[in-house]
Image (cartoon, rainbow, N blue to C red):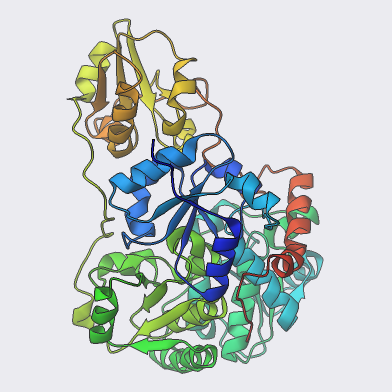
Length: 527
């Protein structure tokens, strides 16, 4: 048997310091990934590898290194990546333990490069902040103050500061003058924890707005730990930017980008970059998803700028790649690019665009491999089979989606843990597989059929079609075939986190600057 190629910790450390392109991929589920991983590792779970690889690692000869922590997933992932056409795939020597034993620094949580960078920004720039108690006092006094929530709108709706306005991070410089036209108005930027409020506040300061600006120290976590009530279901969103304010914001954003060393490219130069088979080039539209859907540059992906800075590793999983940003006003792309440049990326803003360039409508389509051929059944056929014994229905959607709603009788499973799931499932005469759209179920069907002689079918159109036909639904987690390790529960999400978990998260963030120094590969700089 041919030995699998491997890469050692020192190989990857050298490549990171040299700025070479590489993808270090942790193929475990998100929860174990969040417990310990290298700084620039990206999590692409084996269960979803075919669905995410092409978008996150676009160039087929990228130097990819995969690892696990002894679960036996990495070798399977390497084979699947090779089958997808990737030519340079290696295993991390010794896996996660090998990294640790070689002296490599390990980080916990998710989106760590962005969070560590945010802590470095605050450390270097002494980004101003106000405590939850101070902000509450201002609100109680009805002071001249606005609270701008820099998270995604759905996060803001789940829980937020009473009276806060949803202004996702990349929109702040563009919208603030219309929200707070009086330069004496105190502007407060918040998120759930720390990163997006630090970056949002510093964005406004870097752009030189006239208002006093401060972050809400420790975000909604700090607010909760102070014993103050959060609001739920708020719906205040930013207004349209006036023409005069838009022009002024564009000048400010361009100046910040120039200071950060952001590159400029034309459409022709972008085409040359994309034709270069030796480099990876991502093209991201950093406007809101609604603006992207209404019309976007063909071939671009929708990644709102605030989330791109927050979750860079999740969308640009090739460290050392080039990133090109697109918008229609020169504000959001330049401000986002200024942060990516400080995070060590080669980043450019696409200049010279006109309205006709935003010619493609809709949500955009991810590049995907051809799914396996499978035997399918209709929802009506499934409903009939469920009246008889012997049909076992497996749902491979995310556990959160499953708990919220699923087809009655469905068992939830993780694709990469099918052998373990089979041990807990009832005896089957046939299996039916589903997920949201049936796409992941199609890939899972091939894996399951290799493990059993029982016929395997896929629900045509997945659970979405079942719902569209207004069939009965269930909720809850009564039929979990494996533990819910597909997603790490962030201590700053939701409304029912233990206080100890929230405080522990803050303590961890405070230690990130020291971890960056010990790791030594980050390449960050702060304006």
